[in-house]
Image (cartoon, rainbow, N blue to C red; front, side, top):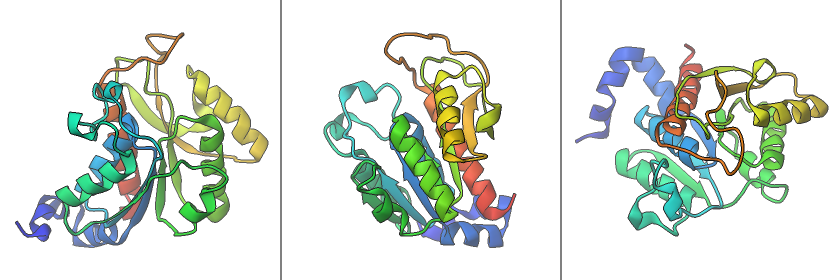
Length: 227
């Protein structure tokens, strides 16, 4: 099958010009777990031409219940590398780059200096999440961030500004730190209701992170093509 055939229905929906915008777009996905993996899947199937995947973590058996990129054969392998391999397996024309590193002070410049049309932040480590957000804001890179999808069985998520979120302890901490850093606004995907479980080790089931990841990707796609 010719690659162009893969996006016939996409073009029918958004138009040829919008499809060209997607094919020329450069999108960065940081964090390739449950949310980030679903984000990667939707972005490549939406026709984004250049995708850079960043994650220093490897798959482990406990990821199998919710992380779409993880199979039994991928246990022990780096998440960013697997994301890039899967992207090419779906669309052989995609420029898929893997960076098997965590975002931190030693790596942030190398990662962001490549330039992107959009960054999707699916990091769950608060200090490095704040670092990524603030550095994207400084560079004028558009960014949308994931909040908590764990401890939930419902999929009632929405996209709003970080300062309008509620019922999410992680969001509360993030708001506090971003305010101190002078970040005045941030698009986030967040739950619209309280978590089912509020204490202990974060728990999870398949649907919520997949839905949130798809929502993040679709939001970035819509922004890139101007919808």
